Image 1: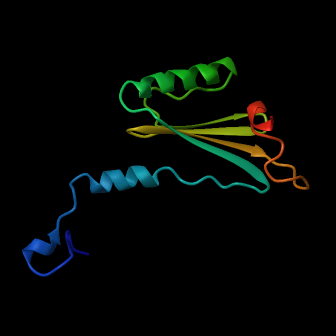
Image 2 (image 1 turned 45 degrees about the horizontal axis):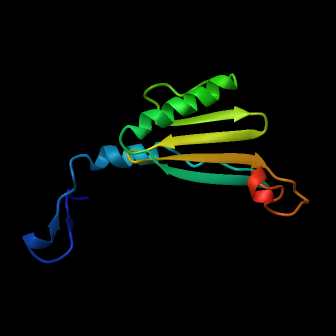
Image 3 (image 1 turned 30 degrees about the horizontal axis):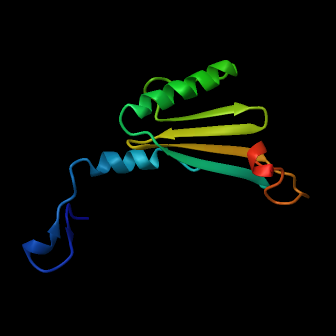
Length: 123
Protein backbone atom coordinates (compact mmCIF):
# COMPACT_ATOMS: atom_id res chain seq x y z
CA UNK A 1 0.00 0.00 0.00
CA UNK A 2 1.43 3.38 -0.93
CA UNK A 3 1.64 6.48 1.27
CA UNK A 4 -0.52 8.50 -1.08
CA UNK A 5 -3.75 8.22 -3.02
CA UNK A 6 -4.09 9.10 -6.68
CA UNK A 7 -7.34 10.60 -7.91
CA UNK A 8 -6.17 11.52 -11.38
CA UNK A 9 -3.17 11.63 -13.66
CA UNK A 10 0.10 13.24 -12.71
CA UNK A 11 1.19 15.09 -9.59
CA UNK A 12 -1.98 17.23 -9.51
CA UNK A 13 -4.06 14.17 -8.67
CA UNK A 14 -1.82 12.95 -5.86
CA UNK A 15 -3.18 13.24 -2.30
CA UNK A 16 -0.80 12.82 0.61
CA UNK A 17 -2.41 11.76 3.93
CA UNK A 18 -2.31 14.23 6.81
CA UNK A 19 0.42 13.36 9.37
CA UNK A 20 -2.20 12.87 12.11
CA UNK A 21 -4.45 10.61 10.00
CA UNK A 22 -3.37 7.41 11.76
CA UNK A 23 -3.89 8.75 15.29
CA UNK A 24 -7.28 10.21 14.38
CA UNK A 25 -8.47 6.93 12.90
CA UNK A 26 -7.14 5.06 15.95
CA UNK A 27 -9.12 7.37 18.26
CA UNK A 28 -12.29 6.86 16.25
CA UNK A 29 -11.94 3.09 16.30
CA UNK A 30 -11.03 3.04 20.00
CA UNK A 31 -14.71 3.55 20.80
CA UNK A 32 -16.34 0.28 19.91
CA UNK A 33 -20.07 -0.04 19.48
CA UNK A 34 -21.95 -1.47 22.44
CA UNK A 35 -23.70 -4.80 22.03
CA UNK A 36 -27.37 -4.36 22.85
CA UNK A 37 -29.81 -7.08 23.84
CA UNK A 38 -33.31 -6.71 22.48
CA UNK A 39 -35.77 -5.43 23.29
CA UNK A 40 -33.95 -2.30 24.48
CA UNK A 41 -34.84 1.37 24.26
CA UNK A 42 -32.04 3.67 23.19
CA UNK A 43 -32.14 7.45 23.47
CA UNK A 44 -29.24 9.29 21.85
CA UNK A 45 -28.60 13.00 22.29
CA UNK A 46 -25.81 15.21 20.93
CA UNK A 47 -24.99 18.67 22.28
CA UNK A 48 -22.69 21.44 21.09
CA UNK A 49 -19.96 21.55 23.73
CA UNK A 50 -17.28 23.46 21.87
CA UNK A 51 -14.91 25.70 23.80
CA UNK A 52 -15.55 26.25 27.50
CA UNK A 53 -18.83 24.32 27.33
CA UNK A 54 -16.85 21.06 27.28
CA UNK A 55 -15.53 21.59 30.81
CA UNK A 56 -18.98 22.59 32.07
CA UNK A 57 -20.47 19.46 30.51
CA UNK A 58 -17.77 17.26 32.10
CA UNK A 59 -18.34 18.88 35.51
CA UNK A 60 -22.11 18.33 35.22
CA UNK A 61 -21.60 14.66 34.33
CA UNK A 62 -19.20 14.22 37.26
CA UNK A 63 -21.76 15.77 39.60
CA UNK A 64 -24.54 13.57 38.15
CA UNK A 65 -22.44 10.44 38.78
CA UNK A 66 -21.24 11.50 42.23
CA UNK A 67 -24.79 12.23 43.45
CA UNK A 68 -25.76 8.69 42.47
CA UNK A 69 -22.67 7.04 44.02
CA UNK A 70 -21.32 6.21 40.54
CA UNK A 71 -17.73 6.53 39.40
CA UNK A 72 -17.37 9.85 37.51
CA UNK A 73 -15.12 10.14 34.45
CA UNK A 74 -11.50 11.07 35.06
CA UNK A 75 -10.32 14.49 33.91
CA UNK A 76 -8.80 12.96 30.76
CA UNK A 77 -11.47 10.43 29.76
CA UNK A 78 -13.24 11.09 26.49
CA UNK A 79 -15.84 8.36 26.93
CA UNK A 80 -17.46 6.99 30.05
CA UNK A 81 -20.09 4.38 30.84
CA UNK A 82 -22.23 4.44 33.98
CA UNK A 83 -24.76 1.82 35.07
CA UNK A 84 -27.50 2.47 37.55
CA UNK A 85 -30.15 -0.13 37.99
CA UNK A 86 -31.17 -1.46 34.59
CA UNK A 87 -30.22 1.78 32.81
CA UNK A 88 -26.87 2.49 31.18
CA UNK A 89 -25.54 5.93 30.26
CA UNK A 90 -22.75 6.18 27.71
CA UNK A 91 -21.07 9.61 27.48
CA UNK A 92 -18.64 10.57 24.70
CA UNK A 93 -16.95 13.93 24.42
CA UNK A 94 -15.56 14.94 21.04
CA UNK A 95 -13.84 18.18 20.04
CA UNK A 96 -17.00 20.14 19.34
CA UNK A 97 -19.88 18.04 20.66
CA UNK A 98 -20.82 15.56 23.38
CA UNK A 99 -23.17 12.61 23.08
CA UNK A 100 -25.29 10.99 25.75
CA UNK A 101 -26.70 7.56 24.93
CA UNK A 102 -29.21 6.05 27.33
CA UNK A 103 -29.94 2.32 27.13
CA UNK A 104 -32.92 0.96 29.09
CA UNK A 105 -34.93 -2.24 29.01
CA UNK A 106 -38.16 -2.40 27.06
CA UNK A 107 -41.23 -4.52 27.68
CA UNK A 108 -40.92 -7.44 25.23
CA UNK A 109 -44.70 -7.77 24.83
CA UNK A 110 -45.51 -4.08 25.04
CA UNK A 111 -46.00 -1.29 22.58
CA UNK A 112 -42.74 0.09 21.16
CA UNK A 113 -41.61 3.42 22.66
CA UNK A 114 -43.94 3.10 25.66
CA UNK A 115 -43.82 4.18 28.38
CA UNK A 116 -42.72 7.66 27.36
CA UNK A 117 -39.06 8.52 27.88
CA UNK A 118 -39.97 11.63 29.88
CA UNK A 119 -43.07 12.92 31.67
CA UNK A 120 -43.29 15.83 29.19
CA UNK A 121 -43.58 13.52 26.19
CA UNK A 122 -46.53 11.63 27.69
CA UNK A 123 -48.81 14.66 27.82
